[in-house]
Amino acid sequence: MLKLIFIANLLVLSASLVMAQAYRWVDDNGVVHFSDRPHPNAELISLPSVSGHPKPVVPPASSGDELEQTAPSVSAISKYESIEIISPVPEETLWNLEGVLNVALRVTPSLQIKDRIRVYFDGNEVLMTSNMSFAIEEVWRGVHNIQAEIIDATGKVITRSLPNRFYVQQNRIIVPPK
Image 1 (cartoon, rainbow, N blue to C red):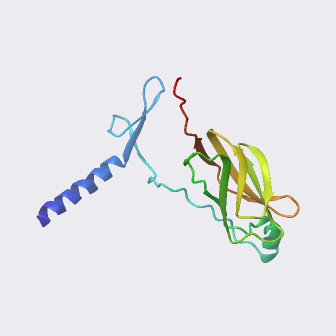
Image 2 (image 1 turned 45 degrees about the vertical axis):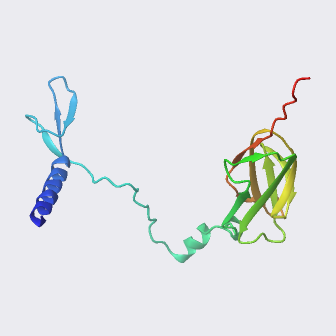
Image 3 (image 1 turned 180 degrees about the vertical axis):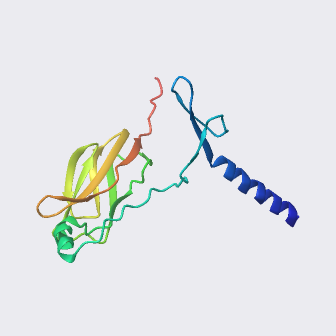
């Protein structure tokens, strides 16, 4: 059994070596061809290894003075990790709301005193609040979107939640014929 596993591994390794070879040649009409099989007058070309992730670009080392000039200001650094809409859940179907949607948010870390949350419902600003739970009225049957963003005292957007799509359904009351 061990011998069989060794042979299988050897075949896989040799196949990967063969697959790594490529050949290039130019035909009589000047057309460039590429192949994984040798061809008369073809040159062997080496292919770069395939990686799922791009290599990071590292800036060259610099002096401390240059770092101070390029460092972002404190206001540009977000003081929040996230803002999430936890209710309604994305793609949730809500039944018989009677026109009132209860919304719950989670802000990590907690919302600062001077900051506010601006709420958009179906693309329109509907609320400015500092509460993590609130209600939006006149939400009827259909597909709806809600999104929230944290803004600072000057009105600058600090961070924004992902848009949240949900559905509202109403039971239909069928009146029997008389």
